[in-house]
Length: 309
Image (cartoon, rainbow, N blue to C red; front, top):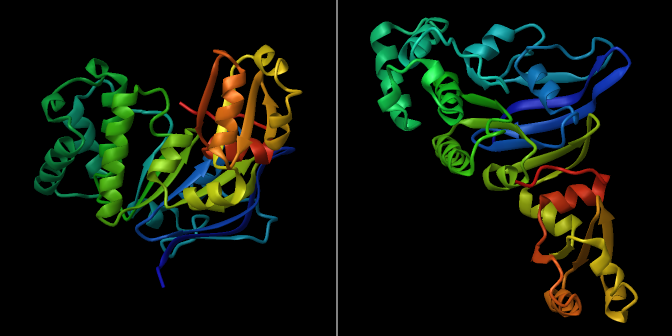
């Protein structure tokens, strides 16, 4: 049986009258990537903060939280010594250069100077930043800063890497580079806990996806399981409602599931031939025929929009 690095059992977190996380439970197996997927305000970041001890679960809930064998409420430092955390903010020291930032951080873990230099050289090479080693932070692009923050989180060779929306706002090239490095870390045995609102990011990186909405777990499973169990295989997405209005009374449309959300009309079917036939009725209208994705699963469950970029 695979060992669990994180066990969350019925935890909640409130801010005044707002229940940010509501009776949440999940487990993260060692050496896997576990992703929390959801829109802004779903409770993803609050969940991550409870895992690494930045905030504590509600005192009046009867839930438990175990991270690497410790309770974050009472053993925050033990968890932090064995973890690396990438928050949404880069929070780098802009008065120092790249190496100085990493050397300063290595001191928090009492890493000997000689060992820290070797580790820093490896991480800069791993994240493709060696030519920027003496650059000031203000001279780096947004993508470089994000890679440096990930390097900083890896300085202590952590068992658990926690990433809170690590690629938000980055261009596709940098995003794909970070995905490649995270997959490599997972192959080397690092356990990854990831929050994201990018559907593609969750699909590519995750062994298990937890979809959250308004602080609650909506569904959980592998990306393929979520697709197979909850949605039709194909989608015809019509970008302008007037095109659908012209064909909605056609008999063939009655054979598919229709969803109207935010001026988009989506037609769902397990038979791609049916959707192809409907697309012919559009006569050049603006549409896209594609396979279903996690965005469609989430829309079906909640009616809310995720970020599909």
